[in-house]
Amino acid sequence: MEDLRIFGVVQTTDEVRIGLAGVPNQPRSIAAIFGLLAAEDIGAYLVEQRLTSPFAERFDLAFTVARSRRHHALRALESARGRIGFIAIRCDEDIGRISLLGTDMRSHAVVTARLLAGLTAARIRFEFVSTSADEISLIIRLSDAARAMDAVRATFGPDVDQVNLVDTATLTRWTTPA
View 1 (cartoon, one colour):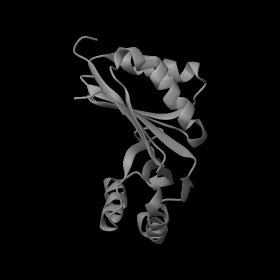
View 2 (cartoon, one colour):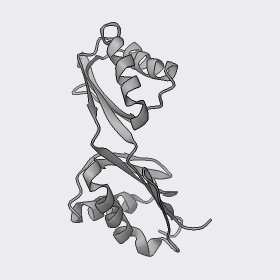
View 3 (cartoon, helix red, strand yellow):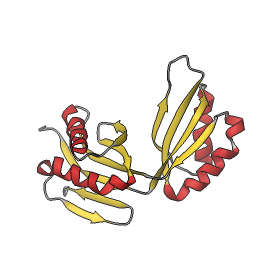
View 4 (cartoon, rainbow, N blue to C red):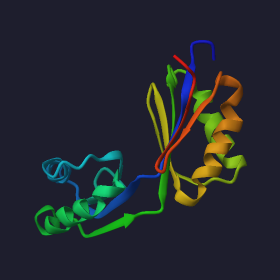
C-alpha cells in the first residue's frame, strides 16, 4: 500500500434514501427523474439502479438526498409519478453513510476488503457499497453509525497518522494533516 494514502473517513447522518420501484426501463425515465430533482435544486448521491435482466421492462432506482430536502423531493417525485411511470416510492430515513477518502484506492483492492471485513467483524450491516479512485462509500443503518466509525478507526488507525477528530450534529471527520 505504498502509493495509497488514506486521508480519512467521513460519517454523515444528514441523508435519506429514496427508492422508486417499477421505473420504466427507458433512458427518458432516468433523465426525467434526475431532471426533476435538478429543477428543484435537489442533489442526488449514491445512485443505485437494479435491473433484473437487460430485457426487463422495469427497474428499481434508489439514491440519497439531503435529509433537509426529503419532503420537497418526495412531493416533486410524487407529483410526477404518472408522467414518469414508476409504480411506488419509498423513503428510508434510518440510514447513515461512511466514506473512506484517499488516493489510488482503485488500485488497492485490499482497502475495500479491509473496510468490509472491519465492518463485518463489528457486526455492521452495509446495504450499498460504491467505490472510486478516491472514495469508498457505504450506506449503513443510522443506529450503527457510531459503531461503524469505531470499526473504521480500528481497521485503518495504523495507516492514518495524527487523527484529527471533529464532531458536529451531522458530520464526523477524522483526517491526516495535509
